[in-house]
Length: 64
Image (tube, rainbow, N blue to C red; front, side, top):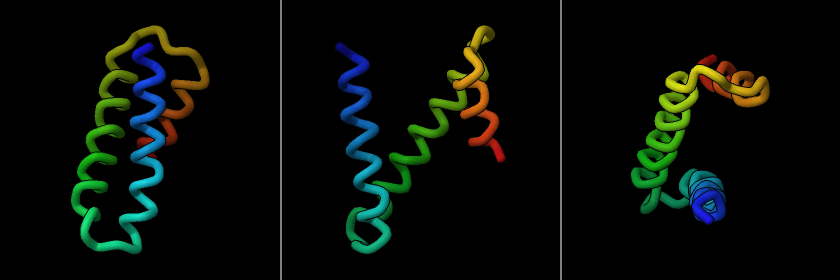
């Protein structure tokens, strides 16, 4: 059940970031939220010793 909530959250952020590019009022909130989500993903990705190849590839691409 929690993965569905995470998918909804990521979907909303995914919609919010492009909208914030054109509308000034949600810009700061969208940028902070996107940064926090990316940061927590990278933190968990590097803290987990056994990652599958797809997750490892995504985390390495996010660093670049």
